[in-house]
Image (tube, rainbow, N blue to C red; front, side):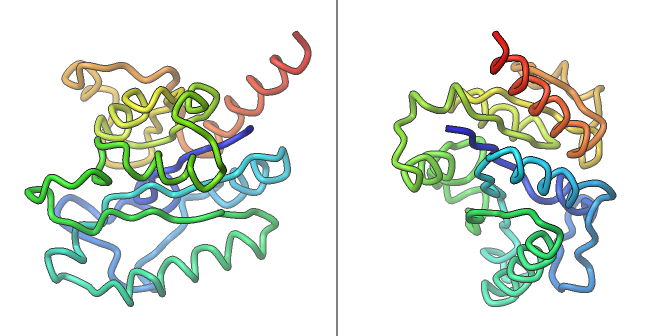
Length: 190
């Protein structure tokens, strides 16, 4: 079982800035190399899920319909390049709702594993790639190997405040994919 969970904003597409949301397709800009990273992981047999907090829907900043439209365009662009995103799990609730799928909660990771008919014990063989401490916390809570990318919201200075450390740090998703594929290659040869 080869699964990678990816945060969206700051990992796949450019982070829109604190307090801002990607509300239109024209505002969704892929980070250079992110499509190629997804293509490489797909080619290597990885199943890819998006796990992202999108509270802008719950706050009324944009609609679920707009989020779905942005997602369809993202998935289509990735597919045209030879990659595949199995499913996007979004928590659209506001942070004060306390829902189980909002990161650092692991509800969406559980849903991804269940879709693959895997138990939570299988998470130890998965990767979670994110750009915030919340992503790293969610990955750790679920038992995933975590990769913190420097292409989004937070940088290395924040790590001291998180209480958990990522297993790996990468410049962006492309470099994160290289780490994952190198680890896969090593485990095949051991």
